[in-house]
Each structure stands twice: as C-alpha cells, then as structure tokens.
Image 1: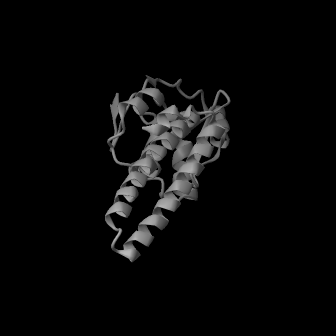
Image 2 (image 1 turned 90 degrees about the vertical axis):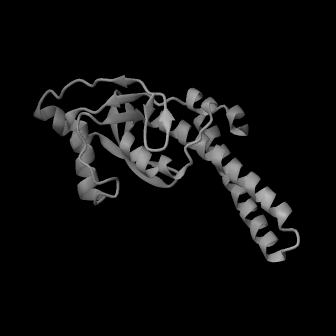
Length: 188
C-alpha cells in the first residue's frame, strides 16, 4: 500500500531493467505519445506495447481534486500496479515536462526512482472515483433543493447544478462503458 498525497492505493512495485545505452535512450525518447483523460493531456511512454503514465503526474493533475475518503471497495477493485521508470523514461518525462509543458506537470526532476502506472489502470481508477464523487455531489444538491424550497433563486440554482451533475454522471458512465468497466461499484 503506497500512501500518496491524498490517497491510499494498493500498488505492486516492479524494478525496471537498466538502460542498455544510447540506442535505448534514443528509442525511448521517441516512444511516447499524448493520452487524454477527462480532457487533460498527459505524456505516456510505451513498454511492451502498453502505455504508462508517471504516478506523480496522475496524482498532481488527476487525483488531487478528489477528497481522500475513497471507499475500500474501489481501492481494492481498482488497484494500480506501479513500476520503476528506466533512466531513459525518466529523461523522456523530464524533456516533455520542461520543453513542451513548461513544468505544468510538476516542478520536479524525474529519476529511475519514480514510478509508472498502466494507462488503463489509471483510467479505471480515475473514472470510478469521479463517478463516486459526482454521486456524492448529486446527493448534496438533492438536500439543498429540499432545504431551499422557499428561496426561488437558490432552488433554481441548485436544480440547474444538479442537472449538470446528472449530465456529467451520464458522461462518466459512458466512458466507463467504453472502457468495459463493471458499473456495479458506481452505485457506491
């Protein structure tokens, strides 16, 4: 179990193989692409035809917006296995972060001590946590609507916000369906 900024997520760390030389560095520096999660672009490196993203970037850009009290049903079902970065992968992320993103993915230098997670694991975890939190917000809006029945402006605002959250919930459910997720946990 790794305890990060706001979350406790179960992870399994695997040590990566060391870089074989300049050829490996050059091929790794060119073996990355952009992935988009909820409108946010993150760089991903490729390993064995799978895409991986940096744990630090996932925490900073995706997960930090959510409260830390994620039910254990979600953290157990959507474990993100982490893997050590190779030196070449670390420098790939350093180059992208410094040159292309101007350090908006964090003011840090990535090293072989940093970790990667599979893109699919991140997507499943992120979208389920987002759905959980949207459902929480929706319940709060329902309470506000009941309490605001005598205040027409507040009632109208709460109803509009609730409608927006319900549209967002449908969007998240569609994304989870696209990823092939079991939506049973979405009712939490």
